[in-house]
Amino acid sequence: MPDLLTAFALIAVVLIVSALASGLVERVPLSFPIIFLGLGLVLGPRGFGVLEVGIHDTALEAIAVLSLALVLFLDAVRLRFDEGRRAWLVPVLILGPGTLMVIAIVAGSAAWLLGLGLIPALLLGAILASTDPVVLRDVVRDERVPVSVRRVLTLEAGMNDIVVLPIVLILAAVARAEVGGAADWALFLARILIVGPVVGFALGGVGSWAMERVDAAMGIRREYQALYGLGLVLAAYFGGTAVGGDGFLAAFAAGIAVVILNNNLCDCFLEYGETTAEMAMLLAFVFFGALLSTLIGTIPIVATLVLAAIVIFVARPLAISLVLLPATISPRARAFVGWFGPRGLNSLLFALLLVANGVPDSELLLAIVGLVVLVSVVAHGSSATPLAAWYGKQVARETLAEERESTPGGLFGQQTERIPRITPAELSARLAGDDPPIVLDLRSRSEYLHADTRIPGDIRVAPDQLTIWADRQTSHRRPLVIYCT
Image 1: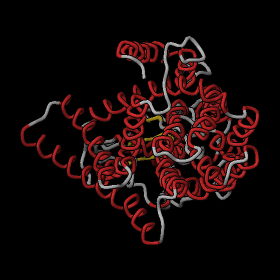
Image 2: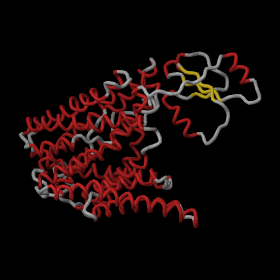
Image 3: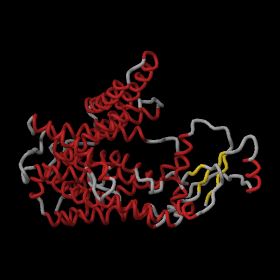
Image 4: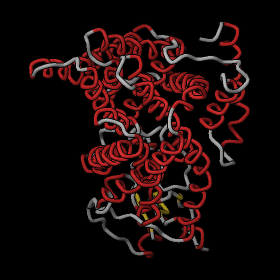
């Protein structure tokens, strides 16, 4: 555990370097996880020896808990339940069958390459099935990539851990042999999957409701509302853990409560929460880098590198290509979604969770996960900017099927109501009238870039961003006229 002065220095470095490097990261094949994992490796015992982090370090555990609880809560708050059931089809396929296929492929490969037993191999498969939203961030913010594709990746990264975490917890209980007969298993599953989330949901619902009512009655300053949101996350984690459940699932359930019950937390908390989570995650990368510098030498390097190649180049691309077979998307989109399933901080946190709970072979699993994460962070982090630029050029060159959709559900042929048509002459007459319509130019990017004509006064909206544009309109009573590719 670093001393107080070293801890202050590390926080200072994280804050200063992340700010100064932010513009560079957006322009070159580089990512923050690469920078700060590398920094941890350099500062660790095998480097300059400035930072020593033990596998049971309380500072590492505290940062890990804060990071994961905040990320899960914020991911839940960002979910949209108003897009209809069909909009969830692609994420459900990826999170369900897709995740199970990845777990099976990775577990089988780990047993073959590393000689792991069934339960450790399945644990490794589940941990490495988690995708990291931090590494994906640059991709999902790139507007050159169609919104429907970005939404698929965002939803998966936001909900992937909620699928993986219960599997990890159940397998960990089996590995520790702490659950006996059917009654014990029923009680264990009820605590993990029902009691903990229910407590988190209740705390999130009541807490956000109380904030909304008190703020309306007396007014609460924005900075205190931001701090209140952070307190709500920690309260949900504590409550879920105190009743024998899982605090992380409780934190996610608290965020779900805010969305479902239509209680609005101040946008200041979302900004503050994201900033806090960002700082905690980057600091965690430094700590993990220092820790992994001592662990990696304890595992078979070549076999683990082969496993990393299978995880990155085989398991996820194969699973995604199978579950997206019915989707109406281009081969480029299929390959893009299949490639960007990076392993990162969440996988490390899950492995650390096994160590904290005394699961057999957990230190070996953490070391293996660490090397796979290092490979993934470099491969995905360095390819995010170039591949997003390449994909953007493809979209600018021709109209792709996924560009016509703004939701993941549309990729599976979601049907829309028939829209009445209007002739150019009728539109001209209406535009010259007293109540002209709003004209939206929804042509594809390639069609728009190569066209030399426009309708005077129209509004340019990319076809996959129509729902985003509509959500931003507070009110408009004028009729809409849309022309597209």
